[in-house]
Length: 419
Image 1 (cartoon, rainbow, N blue to C red):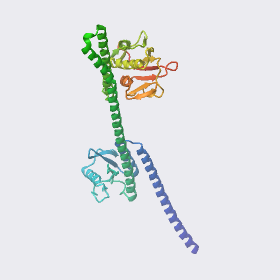
Image 2: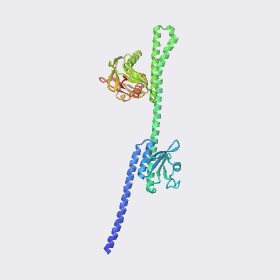
Image 3: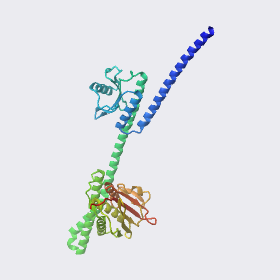
Image 4: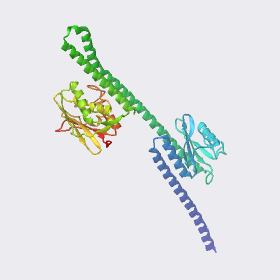
């Protein structure tokens, strides 16, 4: 009997210990799962950069963790707005919104299981940050049971992680705004520097020629007068081209580039551009080698001419007077590519990736920012914007032949012309 009693006591104690250990193991496993979910939730939030994305992720995760409907409300123009809910919810009733506003205003929990508006079926917890609350997260009180201390602690932790992600998104947005403002200021200063430099030279030439004609016109022979007038005309055309480039890059940046598509012959445009370049005094040997049967393309004739004029003019400006500039075409099933190549010094390798950026000029010494020298550094950037608007592309290759030279290719998309 004594042994039986001892065995019975030992069995009871062992059973109690085993039950306690099993319960502790269950609690530990639940905490491990919660910690893993919390880690995954934090990692997921770290990759989100907008308020709406963070709110959606937070509502989904809190619902999965607590097994209760969840809502996330954030401030928008000073008003608390429902941003995300899981399961999906369009709006909250008046009492619930009152509790949410109270929790946000007083930076304290409100609603179910609290001393403030306990009859509301939602528990709202503020999303606290160092700059104050950004909103509230709400968990439904109508769940499998009341929210115990462990569930409340988990809700508070998830709310803190959500608030940190929202603050990070806000900082990222402010950083982008600051970077955009700084870039805008840099471009503005560069543009002003470019205009002040590139407009001063032709305007000084125009002013000097006009002054000579006014003051000494009766003492100059006809040839000298014609030369001065021709210089005024050339410089005025150069100023007009710079103004058109500035207006074009402004329209491209603003997304206001409107295309008036029509069936055009690129041969006519190339010939017209080359004649204009020669009339302005280009000394290079410019050769046009286009196929006899060049298909028509559907594009904006004015913009296509501007893109080709910028590329050909760029080749003329950055090569010596004895250089050779060749213009040919490659006809493919989907594209018609116009290639402008020269045998000049070429583009430095470090400048080649940047030649289609604004205010970048490639010279043998490297890229120069600020539009110094001939031109504003906008020609190839405008050509790229025009080609992108047409659904085509532009590329540059340098060196092109025998370790020097440059080839710029403008590929226009092809369409079947109407019968």
